[in-house]
Image (cartoon, rainbow over all chains, first blue to last red; front, side, top):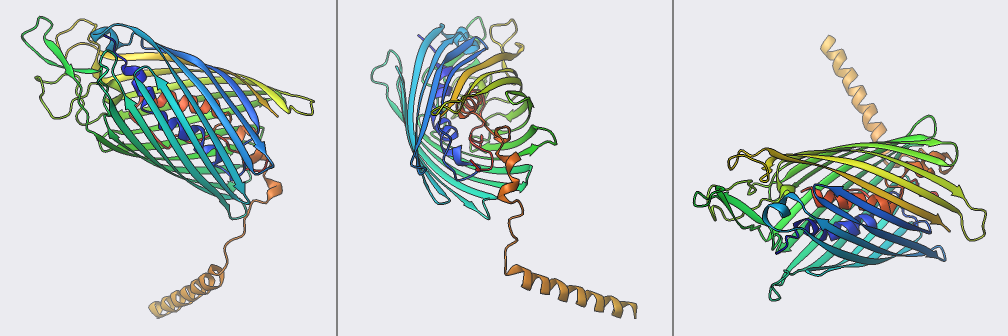
Length: 384
Length: 82
C-alpha cells in the first residue's frame, strides 16, 4: 500500500497554479507579455520528501496584438514523509503538467485564455481559465478580473473501481495603482470554491484505542464535500534612491472549514553594475487549523468530518531566501538578452497540533512535529 | 457673539467646501505620473514576480504545504511601458 498524500496536495492545487502562471501576467498593466523562453530545474527537499523536475515556459507574440504561451512541467516525487513512514511505505511517482495560453491585446484591453492538464497514475486534472485586463487613468490604474474552472478525477491505486470527481471554480479581482514614479501598489482578491471528493483516498486519522498495545488506531479521513475560501492581498513595491527595490506583501485568508491564515513577505532586490541582480527575502506565515482537524480523536468515528492532514492544522512557518541573476545582453538580430539565475530558499515549519508518532511518548504526548526544507530553482531565460 | 462668529465661519467654510466639490468634482484629477517619468517603474527589478516560471513554482510550493490558497499575486509587472 502506498500513501500519496503529499502529491495530492500538489494536484488539487493545480488550478491556482494555472491562475498564478497565466491569469496574473497582466496584473500590472494591459500589455502583452515579453517574448521569452525559460528552462528551469526545480527541487524541493525536506520532511522526507524530495520533489524535482524541469519546467519549460515559452512565449511568443505576433503582430503586437497576440501572444501565445506553452508550459511543460514535471514533478518527480519521492516520499518517505512522516505520514508515509507512520502508516505506509515510501513511494516514488511522477506528475506531468502541460498548459497553453493565448493573450489578445486590443487598445488598452488584454484578454487571456488558457487550458491545462495534469496527469498521474491515480489523479488527473484539467483547467480552463479566462481573464480580462484594462488600463485606466493615463495607464496609472489597471483592473483585471479572472475566472477559471477545473475538473479533477481522483483514483486510487489498487482499486480500479474507485473514481471520484472534484470541480473547482476560481474568481479573481486585481487592481494595480501607480502612486508615484517610484511606487506601485496592488490589491488582489480571490475566491475559490471546490465541490466533490476533497480528501485523500489514502490518508488516515488516528484515534485512541486501548485494545492495541500502541494505544491508538487509524481510520480513513473524511472531509466535507464543499469548500469555499477567500483571500485578499496587498502588495507594495518601491524603487529606492539607487537601483534597488523593496517589496512588501500582506495576505489574509479564511475558508468555510474555519482555516484562517496570514502571511507577511519582504523582499529586497539589489543590482550590481548592469549585469547582476541580487535578491533576499523573508516570509512569515501563520495558520489556525480547520475546525474538524485533530491530531488524535477520542474514539473511532467520533465526529462527522475527520482530518489529520498537517497542512490543515495550526502551525507557523518561516522562509528565508536568496537569489542571484546574471543578465547578458546579446547583440543579435533575433536575440535580446540571456539570464542565468539561481534561487535558494530555506523553509521552517513548526506544528502546534501535529505530533511525531515515530517518537516515543504516550498517545497525545509525543513531541510536536517540525520540519525544514530547501527549495532550489536554477534556470536560464532568453528574450527574443 | 463668539458662537455667532463661529457659525459664520463654519457656514463660509462649508460654502467653500461645497464650491470646491461642485467645481472640482466635475473633472477627475489628471494622471500625476507622466509616461516619461516611468523609467524606474519599467525596470525589471520593479516586477512583483520578475520571472513567471519561477514565481509560479514558489506559489505552488506554498500551496502544497499550507491551508491558504489564492491571491498569491502574479508574474509580469513593471509599469507596462515596454
